[in-house]
Image (cartoon, rainbow, N blue to C red; front, side):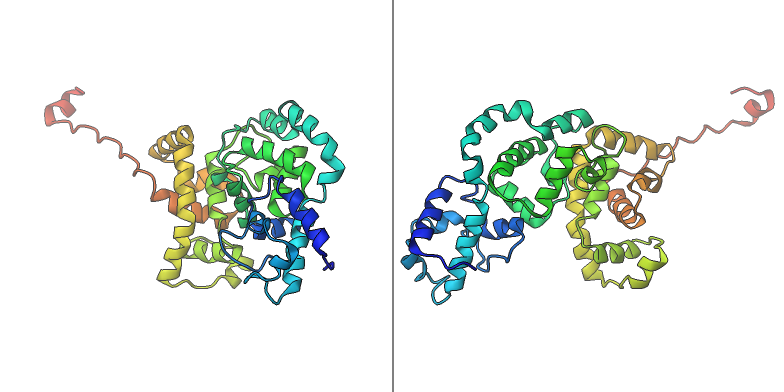
Length: 315
């Protein structure tokens, strides 16, 4: 950690007042920088909380008192977040003015047929990335594209935010499919993949355990390490995944109707979800989706023919 002076702190807090990250959680900023987390918890733990304090006042705050290293860590988070501001300062106005025309992420979305209004709630993102997006009121992939272009010019990005940004910027279809329900080699987003991403909301070990509880036939390597779940734990894991399943079925209305129709023709959820190419997530998605869809209608029974109809061949 650097040894901050009062002058250093005054310069950092003055610059950060104008940052788009001023009201972003300090913990999220630390995660995106891939440095030690900010140890204080609470919704108010944002850079803007500390702007009005001088260095001496900062050292007297209850969150910091007696811990100079914590104050220096705060300064490091803010300083490194601002690291790209100065080199690009003269370019910011020009970049923002031409962002809509030159944004490579928007171009990728258009080329791949991914709708800009696709909700980030249906994307697979870590807690740090979701926190940043929520703090900036970013709800769709199109809004993410705009925010990401601005942030890429101003701050050092890390974690899944950077991974998704890189995949979209370079049109990496396999990488995009890790975060969005996109099918490599096709256009648009798809319900089957969205259901698979909902199942991926759990850590892998929990996915494997829940898949076994759902009756999946696991590969030997997965089955050997799968733990047995109590009823309460299984219920809790289902509760983590189910909102994503429900949200996907609500957003993909056309695909949902087509799925219900195919099930009515005798096709199976397991076959529909095979494109996920992960038996563990397929099993979880199949079990939780089945409970969210209407039961397939049974075909109407053919009318019984009476004796004379059968005898004379009348229908």
